Length: 192
Image (cartoon, rainbow, N blue to C red; front, side, top):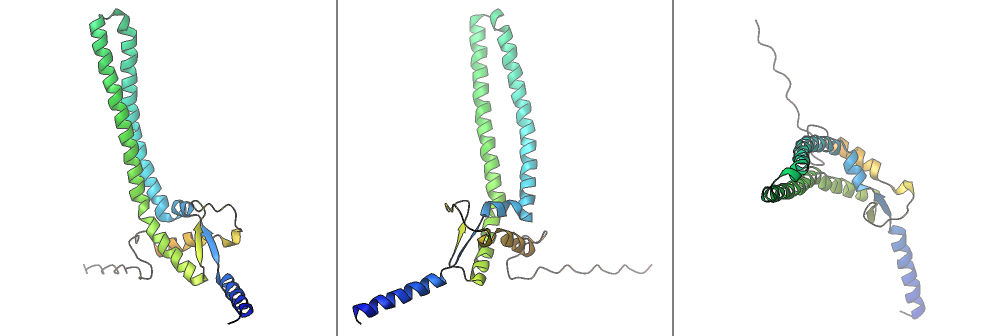
């Protein structure tokens, strides 16, 4: 093969490869927030966080009241008693801060567990969309560094619709491509 033929062949391969390259993008974080399963998970998480936050605030207010009482009484206390009480309060504040950090970690872990089941399902559906559309690559807008792309390449709305229709409420364990389990018809009432 001559040099000129090689260049022509490379140009042809390059144009064919370029013609076959097709990309799109999706906002996975938005999809997780907007699918029905994600909305339900967020509501459960918010309820759990609110309950724990109320108990946490009650404990915080009690500790704050104890510190204020100590501050008012400190001048009238014996130095040894004041030092002991101050040490106790510092320990309580340290323990409180440790519990606050533990609570933050628990809530983050709960969120990871609740929303973590959604990501693999989204990836499966996104793979199906990409194959159907003949896409070479699909970028995640929130983590790919994608600065700009036309809205016509955004698959997020389609992904959300497909997810909600595939994983309807009550059948969240359903896998793509398997029919939803049929609910049996109610039994007829016995004769009187």
